[in-house]
Image (cartoon, rainbow, N blue to C red; front, top):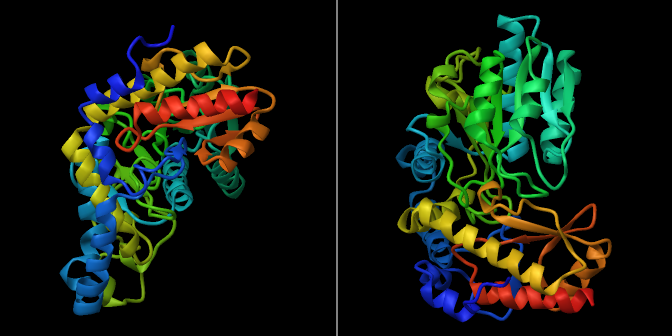
Length: 404
């Protein structure tokens, strides 16, 4: 049954409705259902970028490195940890791409396992893990002579505790999991799956790309070892904005990261003949940080802190639940390919029909922008601070029309 409240009533009662005005283009007629791939720009980011170019870059020039830029990967990482990740200071750094962070932390984890427990020769990963994660794991397994142990999962769900318990054992070096599945939006039970991996003596790496900024994360409380995420989805950093990596403080001195760049050196400007890693999270930084790419991300973090990640999650649940209700009422030929229980669902909804690829193309022509994922999946990504219930209602109506 569709919610008895209309979209207008839901918007009027939404405590976060005013945040929508702070995003470029949010007031237009375009329906944006792809906030889980690329978030709308924060309006304040334009002025912030201009100010940066004119004052910091243009005014301070090379002095900017000494004054702020050199420390920005870790100071911004601390803000991200505090506001979004449930991580104490000194464990998160911003920079590089998601793929590079995945390589560095996966490789560091398996090298540590091989060094301390030579019998641990397996990486456990599921068949519906995000492609980059799977590709990186395949490459590292080939480099290090390791084996991939695959968990076969339902593409409308994700890895369960029972599945992981069956897959891990005395040969497991590392478990790689998505917190929110990119296809189905399955929200993994992170604390329980982390516990299972640890009981087997393995490290675990969480991919937070589809959860950071939309779903509550508590890395320290969950005793997570390693985590990686991007900043251009729910953190609205813009196309190509830098990723982030989290390394639990208890592991920082034990792991050796494989891409030894000058920014991770204990004294970058010593320019010495050998590599001495910096203390703490800084040793996991490699090359020159993408400072420009961090500016827009700062603007979004301020909005997330103002709204509160708990309230953002509540709005996300309300938006996706409304989309599911509308699909049930108006799209009888469509199958829900996401968990129906909102407690098991992240920030997007996937609807399945064999002609969804054509539907997506037609919707784009009409300024209704979802995305498509095989097999036959129309993904509706609803960024909580920039999406209204009216937008959901108009978009779902357009989906029904396009499918007809």
